[in-house]
Structure formats: C-alpha cells, structure tokens
Image (tube, rainbow, N blue to C red; front, top):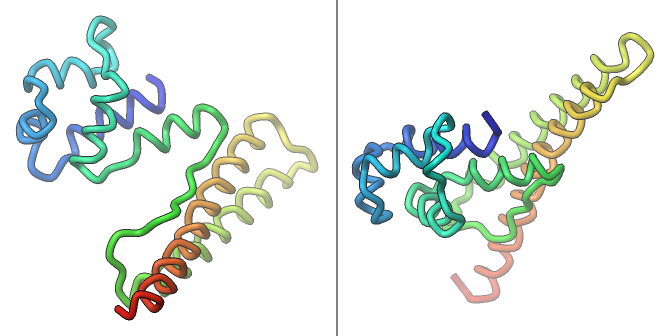
Length: 152
C-alpha cells in the first residue's frame, strides 16, 4: 500500500461525520467512494479532482502530504485560516518538538558511524516534518501582519 493510498483510506474513514456523510458531501456514491479508497481495489481509483474535493470537505491534507513525501518533497503552508493568540505559541512549541525529533533521528543514525539509505530517508522525513512546522510560524506571522495592516 502506498502512502497516498493509506492517506486516502484514512482520510475517508477518519472523517468525523462518517464516510457516508462525506460521500454525500463530495457527490460520490457511498460504496463507490469506499471502493475508490480501498488500496486492494485496482479497478476504482480516486481522480485528482475527487481527492481535492475530499481534502476540502474534510480539512484533512494527509493525501497531499503523502504525494509530496512520495516525491521527496514537503509542503509549505503560506496562509492560515483564522488565527488566535495561542496559535503562535503552539506553532513554536510544535516546531521545537519536531527539531528535537530531527536531532534524535540524526543522532540515532550516526550511532554506528555511518548512515544508510534507509536512515537518510528517515532523516529527510523528520526534516520535512520540522520544516512544515516552521513554515506554520511564518504563515501565522504573515497573517498577523496582514491583520494589523487591515486594522483588525
């Protein structure tokens, strides 16, 4: 199962209002949606348009992150929805936690004095997660600056 297939399956099945409600929202018959996100089903596949509709409806971007990861990339958030005072503090705390995870991963990989391809992929993965969290800080700062300019 690919990371995308796993993310698609989990996005649909983890939706808080249920997969049946999601199917109605995205205008895909319920059983068809279940077949499309079943990683063992080769005949039914999500289209890009359908995946985008599902991500918009759920607010869950795991599919997008999975695609980026499969291509060796990370996503960068450039805009945030509504923000409040706690979000900057939370974002900084999360970024520091991810930085710690990154350093732990590098340290563990260096224990035997060499880094394997698998260890490098793990390092890259934790680095990507850290970068994602740091870009959230920037996005919140940009939103705060925009709010200030608009007099909000």
